Amino acid sequence: MKLHISYSIFLFALTTSAFASHIPIESATVTAPGKFYIGVFGGGGSSNNFNGTQFGTAFFPDAAGGPLAVNAFGRLSSQSAAFFGAQLGYQAQEILLNPCSHWTLGPAAELEGYSMNNSSFHGDLINNTARLPEHDFSVTYPMSRTVFLANAVMSFNHPCLLVHPYVGLGIGNAIIRISGADAAQISPPEVGINHYNTNTSDTNSTFAGQIKLGLSYDINKYVSLFADYRWLYLANTHFAFGSTVATGHVPTSSWQVKLDAQRYNLGDIGIRVNL
Image (cartoon, rainbow, N blue to C red; front, side):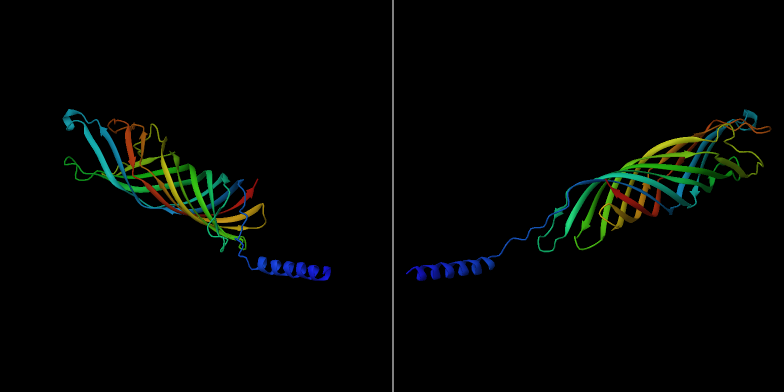
């Protein structure tokens, strides 16, 4: 009798174990916790062509027709630009997309700043006036740009892959400084006169926005390398330069310069460290 009971218990245990092994168990993937990170990066790219406008007044005496309004319009050429910057970010806990595929989304928020080296934008600005057959200026604007952005970033991660694609969108502010601006009248020619000569520098801030696409590569759990493509937008800017003071030249008002939006295609590489 005891032998029969023991044998029955043994069979029950085997049956229970076999049944349990065939019960589907919901897959569980442990996602990475949130983390802070810092990074540095550098690269280069180029701008688009964009429009520029110069406004001012030349105070001719009444005998010469009186004051002449100068409204000169033209287009500035594209220029290359190198840049370097830094970022501080926080990636929140990853979001599991599908327990079977183990792909996760990593939402992050970043503060980012970068500085672009001086680029000299050139162009011809034309003032159409009935008083002169031609009234043309050749202008040069040596320009530095510093950009500050708050980015929302989403990365696509898999535990078996060391490479992670990501996409980001940022908005913020850019500080644009022009130092050593020059406006030379080329027709009719006025050799050796910079029409901004009493003040050739000014600074303006404007809206900045960017879209970035990138790939990061994990060297280890603390350090990763990354590469970005960035499309950067800098909104319209306005600068005020000095009046023209030169022997033999009629006095002028200060000169107002308006530049249309600038767009840049940029690429960079960098290194990021998890804190």
